[in-house]
Amino acid sequence: MFSKGDKGKPIWKGSEKDLAHCQAWLSAVEKALMTDETKPAKPDRQLMQELELAKQTLEQAIVN
Amino acid sequence: MHGVNATVSEGDWPEKPSDPRRLRPYKLADTSIEMELMIHREELADRPTLLIINSIDFPIPPSFGFCEKMWAAGYQVIFCRRPGFGNIPGLPPALLERNQVKNRSAIASETALFSLLINSLELRDVALLGLGSSNSICYRLTQLNPEIQFTIYSNPLFHPAIWDVIKPPWLKRMIRQTLLSRSGLKIAVRGLKAVLRRDPIWFYRQFAQKSAGDQQYVSRNLEDFRESGRMLQNITPETFYYDLQNALIEDTRWDPEITSASNAIILSGHETTANWKSAITAEAKRLGLPIVFAKSGDLFVPYASQDALLDILKSHAMANSEAL
Image 1 (cartoon, each protein chain N blue to C red):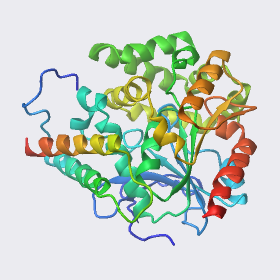
Image 2 (tube, one colour; image 1 turned 135 degrees about the vertical axis):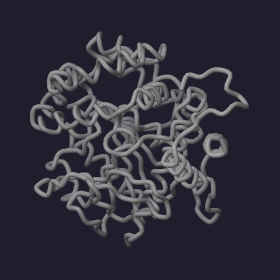
Image 3 (cartoon, rainbow over the protein chains, first blue to last red; image 1 turned 120 degrees about the vertical axis):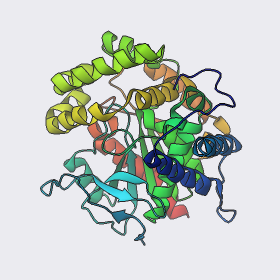
Image 4 (cartoon, rainbow over the protein chains, first blue to last red; image 1 turned 60 degrees about the vertical axis):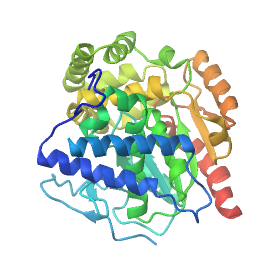
């Protein structure tokens, strides 16, 4: 944490265990992004953006 | 009504068979993620759930008496300890970077996990109780998971008077220090852990000094507060930073369009400062949310004023269920 100017650079490197942890969280975020159109309540756009940013962060961490 | 997708994995966890409120690890469906849960009376029952998510200051389930009182009123208490606050790893490090805390992707990710938990357990008719710093999750979870019928935001930290009520002054300085620099964070967390290790009861009595109701709750549940001191030894500086920075700085302006359209209420206690009361009342008005001040309690107001909590549940959550 507290790293500056990390745009475009690897932000995290971890062990295989950490990688699996990251992938599991990505899966949870992806499930949350799949909204159920049949349900009356839908998440606000701001929350969906936050989740989308989380997805991108986790994907980047896994790739790196 | 309840699912079988959440599996208990006992693993190397210490057994406490004599404790009916013991937390157990649950593996979420189709993932390797475990979460720590206390299901009152251990088995999921076919009745509405009162789902409680812990604040940073007390990652321990409510007292047995509280859980039994809610049971008598028709609710099964499920307490979920947030990842990183006990025996389960916290958020992946990539999400604990400063940018990810600032753009709130970290808190959104944790919310996603709780939504998955509700779906995995196939909970229906959920009343959600947020405490202190966990209200940021509850605000999002209310939007994300349609099984939540009603939300109680207890002592939300989203208003300008928050710094006035953190007592004693040395704790306020310590918390501010965690948010200023990396070195400050590490020193402050180390200091806080040392205090909690040496004398957790003294710490909680200091922390809860404004409220006779909180003091009484501490006195009646000393072992829970000792356990809290032990659990908080496991929190990393990064998790500490994430939760406080999010709750006190980044997530302090909720959207009134969202809150006014939700079935929710704010709960606070009378045993606090006048400044806090006026600030939280103004914020409740801006958000279009009703607010209740219970007679007793402040930090632990739902536990100290159990009858007030039950009145809220009866008049809001159950009224909503009947209307559906």
